[in-house]
Image (cartoon, rainbow, N blue to C red; front, top):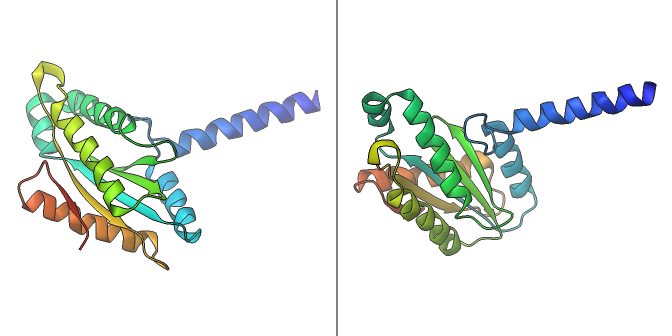
Length: 174
């Protein structure tokens, strides 16, 4: 009986950890789980590239179509991204309409190719009522000794340039 109770408690603890590690709406990694994995990858000193992307004009989606449709778009964009990445890559929802893809072993060129595949697939997808939602993407590669905040800042600067250059674009860190 004690063994059964212990096994049940272990299963419940595992389920709770999985729930905390997963973004409820999209099914991708939560911000906390993504950043934890990103830090582990950076500590390993292996090559790592990051693509940061968000949905262009997402506020308009919510304002015009409502939050339920906005939620559908978020879930669909995550699903599209999952279909574009390599095995071993990790997608996380960092918050709102912002997502990231950690790509262990990828060069900037490889990460840009994957990021552009996500961008094109999102642009081609149709949502409720025939609506389209594009994404802008910023890509950066880690250098030795870099922490997650620095890598995210580089990818974010590239993402900001993609938005400034007209959206539905990909830019790489300088």
